[in-house]
Image 1: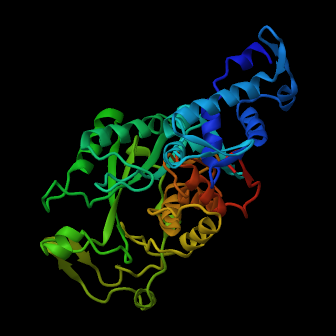
Image 2: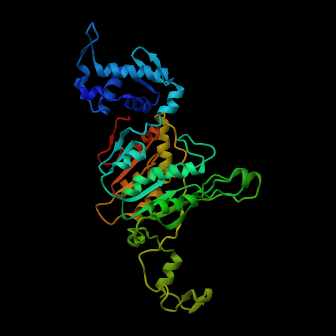
Length: 412
């Protein structure tokens, strides 16, 4: 084994391999080969033996180092022997190692248009070599009851967490690019029906630290949103049940924003089409103290290709695509993601905010099942995504298997 290979720290690669297995079990021979591939070590190096110690007994130094790391992980309570030549994650190991170490990035899957990386967003996007046209992401919500993927609860720590994830993304935004953040509006001050103002603080931090400007607050109207907040709406009866989530749209250069609402025009109603065919309005009318005027024979007299959508976006989270991916995840023994953006919503925003050229790139640093990447793939726009939870990378891959060039990475 060369001196360069002797200096490799293989621990993180091994952790990633064990964490990628649904049952946490890996045979040693498979572990040797997979670890070597992740570390960039040629397979034939695993057959090279070197004399060790006074007796000069022959050993392969790579395999020896892997076994040494196994013992380290055992002493840390992360691994236990399943049978001869096979080790498995303990319950504690499964909880700790499914979240990949921040200094490791592994190919999750890819297509001809895009790539999903299993790794921390800070590492993946720090090394990006092309500008981003649109970043559409749903950051982990600041919930009091953490979800499986974890979340930060302290308000100041949460804002720092968001800024840390978004900093390399913002640094690579093209001029006039868009950043869309889906955040929860349903967080409350402790013991109070008053909502937290963490979103306002985060928006001001994005402006003050990164120079981003707020273009809009989209209302994502979700007709199938579960009743809540339970404490204040269902129990105390002092709040109304929630029906929406906000999506904040920001840009680094609003004066040259790349969006175009003609790409997402909606069909006119039959009543409106009838009005157009009849030559438009037949009355002259002014309302709202002159703010709005209707002119006979002019207002709504010209046929247009469609209706400009309003900024209230109505999409159910319980979509057919989510159900399909959930079935595939269960069949593979993977957990079902509890907070996915509906594909139709992601596709609407991708269509609205991209489409001007071949140099575009859609990004999602907290991709989960990667609805953003799938929407971009369907729209024919290049994409890149990162996700820190290995199960979600594996589960999300099911949505891409039918696209050109699909390839699963070392996580499988």
